[in-house]
Image 1: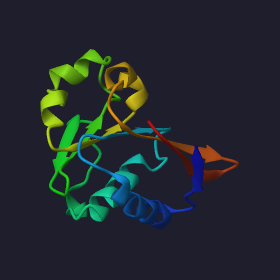
Image 2 (image 1 turned 90 degrees about the vertical axis):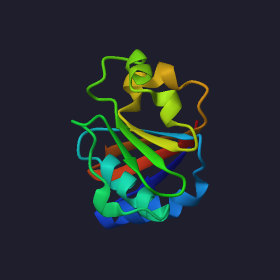
Image 3 (image 1 turned 135 degrees about the vertical axis):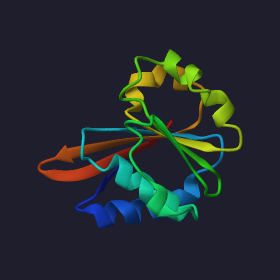
Image 4 (image 1 turned 30 degrees about the vertical axis):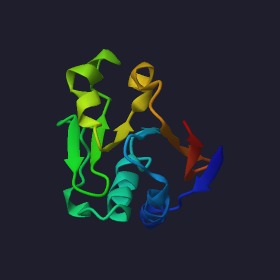
Length: 138
């Protein structure tokens, strides 16, 4: 596991842009951490790093799911309002993943449905008053 300090929004965006070349279609990025820790900001930077339009990136808290045109296409899902792993199937997750990658905020809520999907786990945290992210391959 690697831990990266993210002192501000610019650092979070830069980290995500630099992380983007590691991502491939068929992977799932599992983003967890408290409100305001940088999950959506990271996603915005990831879209930029994959050649997409960052102005289209918004938290999917109320829509549950957003799709971004980048390379590869990205599914941005918020599992906070899902009642459990079976709700992913109801959203058509497997079909949506064809040729795409997924970024799932609050992924711990649907972790059982993500076994078998390769990708990354990113836990955004506040440690000693500083924002950071712990990264590990899933």
